[in-house]
Length: 467
Image 1 (tube, rainbow, N blue to C red):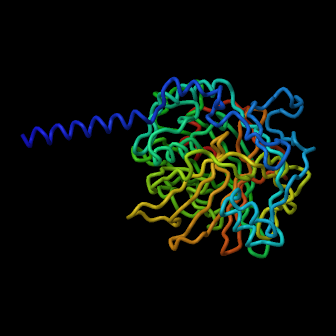
Image 2 (cartoon, rainbow, N blue to C red; image 1 turned 45 degrees about the horizontal axis):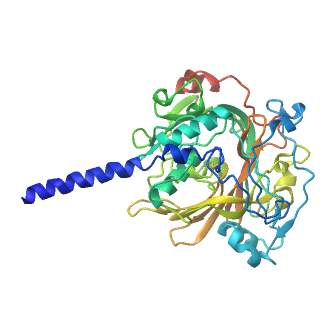
Image 3 (cartoon, one colour; image 1 turned 120 degrees about the horizontal axis):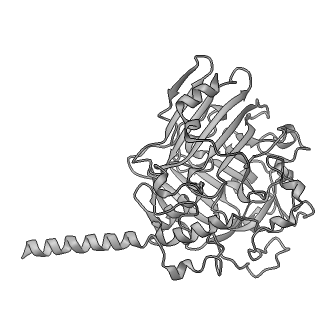
């Protein structure tokens, strides 16, 4: 009898586990909200009911009208003019009035204001909900809503769109879904970018490292499908072009969807030895040399890689209103030199734009037995695009240590919401790393190039390109 009860209990537990897994996808009825009460990517469609021309207002989402942009401004690879250049600053948040707005300012941003009270501030503008994507991405997102499943170490049943536009399941499942939505967000299919990065020292000095980067997002290739992904989200290739002592060096990454099934594959090419070598440790908290140790491998893109080191928590059951960097066209303005952008301690706040937007707040706490430089991280994820806009990173003593910011903008020729500049601050050292600088480059991101074949992104191809 006891054996029967035990067996029955095991079967019941198994059935509940299967039912729990099924809850990761939503019903067709809920998915029908996408494009109706929810945007095609899952954010609330309606505004917040306040004057959208005020710093407290969030308008309804209507998409981004590409036809309103002059054709001359949408040529491939060119720098983007600001479609909102006539907007005026509606509010400035600084050390003097921060207490009045602190519930709407990420903790790390508050720390930056308090660390640099005489120079760092937020210029708040009218909220512009510019997130947009092609219709086929919307269509795939709606299909994903009812088919995507959250596994222990990856995602299945999703392709070519946001995997979890409507968060569901337990609190932890929702938090992990939100992070996967960031990792798998739409950023085009193939992009070529030439940009610089700098580590700005405490005294304001810096040296540029310039590279050409190429990314092929296989997950968003309309010619493929989930079955043809071979567990690869994207290929990333970067060639250093300056300074001369580093020129010719290269990095190749194969980013995998399930990194327990197959860890990230990475290779480096050394121009001096003309050799390609595996880079097995390019993950988690490995310091990035070009960032002078100010950025870890999984800081890149605000967060990347396997989420298995952390326990995840959704801080609020619904997105909350917060001031985040948004529609930042001016940080890439070619009328500015790098010296106009990079100040001692932080990027020039008068060329950045902040808006009130809805964000998901997700907290990651290091699992017992795991080791990482960050004991805890808080992510502020734009609800419209699933792009992480800000991150607070805490050390092993639980103290706020580093702050990351993504200065988001719409690349309206695609269209896609991505970042114009990523900045990684060390509050104690009073140094920061700025990535994706392109003010002095002749072109911006180019999404128009034909997708190379898979052989282009192989170690052998890396060696050929490095010669």
